Amino acid sequence: MPMGVGLIGLGMAVKPHITSLLELQTQGRIRIVGGFAPSQERRSAFAQQWGVPTFDKQEDLLSRPELDLVLILTPPGTHLPIAQAAATAGKHILVEKPVEISVSRGEALAALTEAAGVRCGVCLQHRFRPASLRLKAALDQGELGKILSASASIRWWRDDAYFRQPGRGTKARDGGGVLLTQAIHTLDLLLHFAGPHTDVAGFASTSPLRAIDTEDVAAAAIRFQGGAIGVLDATSVARPGYPERIEIAGTHGSAYLETFQLVIHRREGPPESVGTAQSGGGGADPMAFDHGPHRAVITEMLDAIEQRREPSNSVRSALHVQRLIEAWLSDAASRA
Image (cartoon, rainbow, N blue to C red):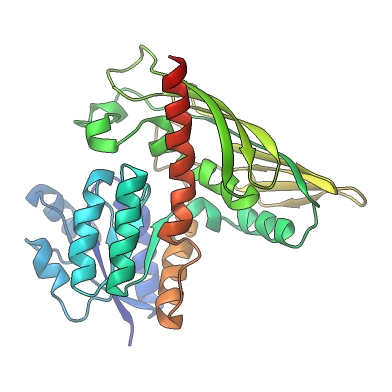
């Protein structure tokens, strides 16, 4: 039987998810049960655009016996109570990044899903880009040797229209600024490659470009548990927005990953190139990217549920990047 999937939260983040779900439904892998949002306007617009039924109440969706997996696509600070309701109903969960607005709330979310015996993954789709998968495999197989240096640059742009949505860029709604909202994907990917951090020395500031109470310019030096060191650069003020980039140097070679394109230089032999340069959503349109990695994230969740294992993008694995961000901002505040 196809697995039943529902969505809670029908805002900007829904497009790559519903596009992926419709493709998986056509393939016979899943059945879309329906969606829910508190706003009647959003429910109506979603149903009209995508031809998918909606529910007037969250509990009406969660009570459906055919529902197996629920995607939580709401603002970060709402993830914990919604996950609690879904877990209590016995539904598996895929939550949008970040896990929650803080590490402590993220840990609480992880604990409650584990206690309920449901699987929970986080939508960190950059891990599932083909070039990212190839680099992860190369590192796991020791092709670059021991990592000595690992750095990331996320120089994006968000325009005035982006910040017109009420609460956008505020601690109250988003929990954080460029680090937690935009750069988190690339920072997570860097830790996915190089491992968790041990130390971070950072700076962060808020530009005069928009009326927000979170950082939109940040930089740091980082040390990883494996001994490698690197630099981190993140901003949403770099008009018109540039491709995010990760660079890794090891004892046997080096690599750089720019959105969907990877180039590996080994100690011997010609360089290896995977993928092509594409938009990663770093410009004024945050949704200007291919939805294929989102489909791969959902497929991984389906596989994990069927195989009764933890997804590779589990909540516990996703908390590494939030610990880094909290430590970065704490260190920056101590220098202010």
